[in-house]
Amino acid sequence: MKHKLIIVIALFIFLIPGISIGEEKVAKVIIMRGKVSAKNSRANVFSDLKMGDWVEEKATIQTEKRSIVKFLFIDKSQMTLGPEGSLVISKFPKQEAGLITLIKGQMNNKIMKNYLDDGEKKDKLYIKTKTAAMGVRGTEFQVLYNAENLKTSVITFSGEVKMAQTDHNERVSYNSLREVLNSDHAVSVRDGQFAGSSEAGRVNLPIKINPAQLNSMKQNSDLAGTNAKTKQKQYQSPIPVGVSAKNFTGSSSNTVDKSLSTSLGSRVAKEVMQQVVKEIKKSEAKNDSAPPPEGFKDENTGAFAPAAGGYVDINTGIYISPPPGSVYDENTKTYTPPPNLGGFDQATGGYAPPEGLKLDAKGVFVMDNSRLKQDLLQKAVIVPVIIEMSKAADLARNFERTLYRPIEQGGFTQENLDKFTDDKVNEMTSNDTENTTNQSSQPVVHFNITIN
Image (cartoon, rainbow, N blue to C red; front, side):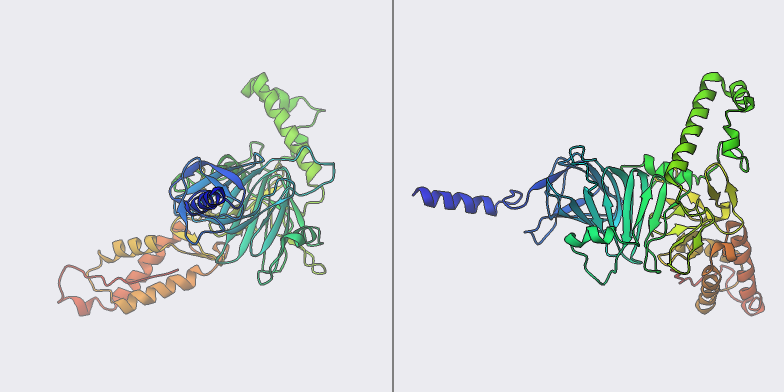
């Protein structure tokens, strides 16, 4: 009788949803917005998560639009999954390195350092996507993976992330991750740096991104404000462009100290100078082997680096490099992108393309559909003629041909967008004006344009 009772209780527990009898619970939901769901290794369907829920090892997590979830792991590490993201907690043992598989989306991480290790430099956590592997110890960083273009990108806020590109057609096992990250093609992404997978088959050498965008991304650790519409921000160094930061802070001269004290007050001036000196020393100490700011490519080894100071697009994982002719800032050792390359959202840190454009997964600036339709419609209704669908299609193709060029090679800016639409509408309608004089005075616009 006793044995039968034990069997009945075991079956009862097994059949109740939400009661775990298999994998260890490893992370707790501490922040959540929108709709987030999870599926454990034994389930066939996803179930909605709520605040305070625990998730197991081997669980799959997914977020929908305008949704985020932040987990606190059993080792006090924190991990936030952004909108329309998906990940698997593949392994999270207490005595070995964990493994998170990012299926798609944006992930912000604060990994706690293991202060009880034996002195050997061991990775505490591995993160992998289809095209890259990463190894971390005590680090704050962000990982982006775009499942459409297979790009993996890493931005490090503090600490260091080791990164190596992997073949998306080959499966990298847990046991081989350390070997991959110790290969010649692996790089170390340090404070303020970016690295990403590429079509060249290897990760670029880490470079600095736009300092102001970096700061906004770092402040947005919970990936909040995803849909905020804030003014685009352009970076401007507090020290005049072209002035050497070393000379600016030289201890042999009191000119700068006096000037700052007069304008800011002695206490604030002292704090500013201390911070500038600290950042310079920190940068010099960690980036002695960094590639030149203008970028380079080694034809023999295949190693390469784009120009420093560009923007990272959160949606595509693409790095938008400063074009030739960008102003070099000696103080930050980066190039400042021109205004027609866009800016960034101050609330999220996300890249904001030039108005009326968007960046597609191929890294090409294309017309934003909603802006194109609105602009053409507004301009067409004031012309007393009919714009036929075939002609509208021709207009769309003209837009597409023009837009499929980088912005620095003559792609659209807000300034020439209006002129282009005016010219094209006038060009296509001028020849038909005489033929439409007998038609209704109220114009009819056949509108069916899609540009991706």
